[in-house]
Image 1 (cartoon, each protein chain N blue to C red):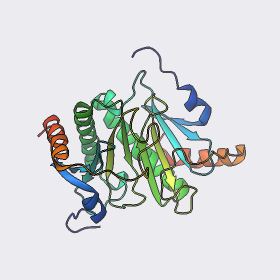
Image 2: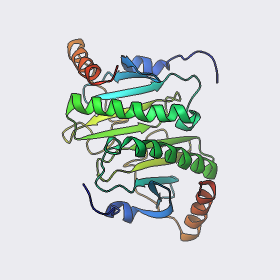
Image 3: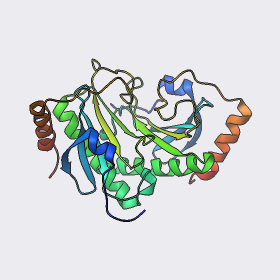
Image 4: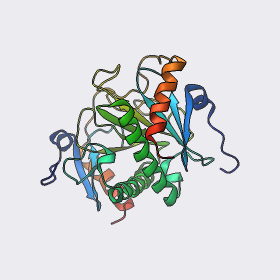
Length: 137
Length: 137
């Protein structure tokens, strides 16, 4: 449960980096169907939120709030979906997803629905820039 | 966005009360397939976690941790799934679900999977007692 923090390989493949906050790396899922951020606390060996100590949990909550505000501002979403599941990828990570009533899964959760539709690099960069601008630095 | 706190009718129908923590009512989903708790902060008119003020968010995180520990102790689950979705029920609520690799949805999320299987009252009461015992009072 010690050693350096290394991003899970599947998360690395499915996402691109947006920003590093004090605790968590913020990454964008490469799927145009849903504006979908993944937060990965840089703490090696953590699986559950309760594996974090109380100070890190408090920080995680405030980073979830900051990311939520930024994603809502960037997308004008109807609803945020926030989740820590980790059934497939064990490394602790939190999903923050912007939902619209017109999206490909509404009102169901997005996980496991259909196949991802990758961004063109210009549209991906534009969304990342919007989110970065809305995040505290 | 003001007035008294009233539990959403669908949550009231689908769940039974377990305990009231400082911020949140803890309720058990009436579905034997998954030991599944719902946390409802008693704050009228809230939809998103970011609708809570910073003190309530901190309290919510610590209540999520307490509920997670209790549910894990009561079930010996392989993984906790934690989520705030609210696409169907707008009232702010957080799911804390005990997952096993042998359960009816693994490794997928539980939401929208099949039909719920209600508890017999004796097994429901036994589980509620286990969870209550593991929660701070």
